[in-house]
Image (cartoon, rainbow, N blue to C red; front, side, top):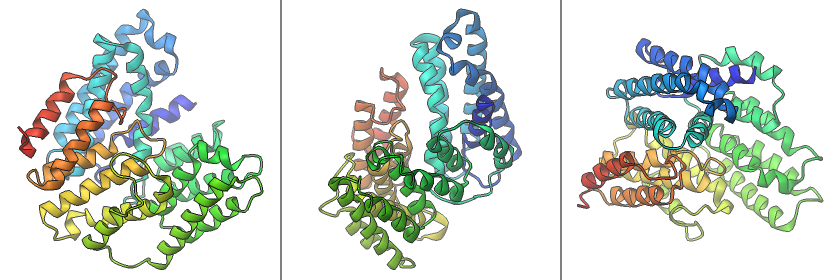
Length: 379
């Protein structure tokens, strides 16, 4: 049953661009679903996935998955820049999985195939637009029937855009006296809960109450109690400041706070303030609602990528931040922030920070970097 759930989940969330997908997009996504219906059960069993007797079956379906991803990328050209970049990222992922299986390391191909399940979580926790999810009703009964952990259930609910249900599920864990606050932190529950509560729902007061209850527990250590206090203060400030329009000048000031770690370093003390800023910048980046210049929009994309890296928590296997940096470059290639974005993209590729890359750098990776480097004018 869990295999069927993963199938529907992945087929539904490969791309979350247009609120209503057109017939061609739905056809291509159905092809993706057909491929995954075969691949996912095999990928859950290393021996079955690598069994020579199954090689032709795996190859045929990986090829079909890649062809469908190519079609989605081609179909994305008249869509928004964000849709185009998401489609291109999926296309690269499908190509990488197929080539790893065929020529390089089949076990790594299996890992990357399974890792696609996190793509929907990262995309859907970015904003609450288009909440009506076309296949959510198909999954409700599966969610109820599966022996999932609370964290697994919450992640699936986020992937299905069932945000209130996901918050209820996380709060059940955060209120459980049998779960230690340290384990809550190490398991990423605070990060994932706050990402939805702050960036998607704007439920500042609700989240502050929940975190304060954890801080008040006798088994909460001093370091964590102090961190929770910082988050509660920032949540209360966000509640008071709701409705204030975010200007570029204010965004720059908050982004460059002296106590905020630079570059790719994640400072969890600033988690809530960074999530609040990320939500505000996400609204600014809506090209239909802004008269910003290309250079300013590139700066917004650059900041969104850095904020994604700071708040990414346990989602380090996802290229969401890279999509923002690429958007910055393509929006205003000659701008200062395009140069900064390229530097971070190159660093990400060199260190495989995003996990999107295989452990060996590929020609395709360098080719893409070379294209972006030329756009920026660094050659």
